[in-house]
Image 1 (cartoon, helix red, strand yellow):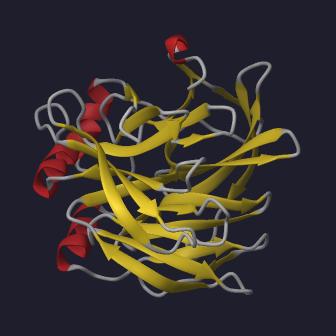
Image 2 (cartoon, one colour):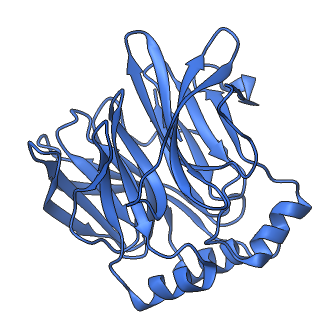
Image 3 (cartoon, rainbow, N blue to C red):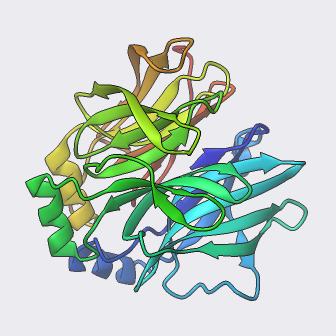
Length: 313
């Protein structure tokens, strides 16, 4: 999920793809799970969540499974960049938010030969973005082995307006990605590696790692506190439980956790950590969280969402 300066939060729902187990796919089929993009207004939380319809002649809802998302606000308009898993390939889709009609207008599809299994995206301009190529194998069993063995088959990719290029060293299951508050650094999370990395973009958009912090949890997706520049992380504190939950969400539960990484003024060093949420009764598999005026929305991989008011910061 990603939140605009005015509190509009865009949420992807209905994650699917070749990396998920047959049991998960059966769960999706039984519960009629489908790919959707939702809207929650943190200025009006009582209004709840609503689905945004997608319009555009070049867009197809068939095998549409959205995942990572990034918001770009430019010249009074709101654009979304969304990672999409389809049956045969992964893509990044660009949309424009039509606020009057509460619709998303599909604008463009980005695809390339370097793309294998995408996870998250961070927009840097109207036609440029970073995205995490999470792994190599688009197969449930091989993807599981890639993770268990610890193969560094992923990369951070950059779309430069013409094509995708590799801009990082090989990565181990790099999933969440976002820009620092000032846009001078790129934050990348390795969930399986339990690490939070800080990169500096060079003139050619390639990334140089300048810091890496090991966490005692499995972090998923980062977002930025718009006031302080600190980093919120949706996390999975018990690894084997989230693995079992993602294999069979109908019978297995997983704990949820949200951490706030306090960053120094440079945006490169973590000076402290605050746990904002720890729950294993109501919310299963927290994957992201966003903060706006001390109001927090927590999302999960395939469970529900939770709205909180934060009074501890």
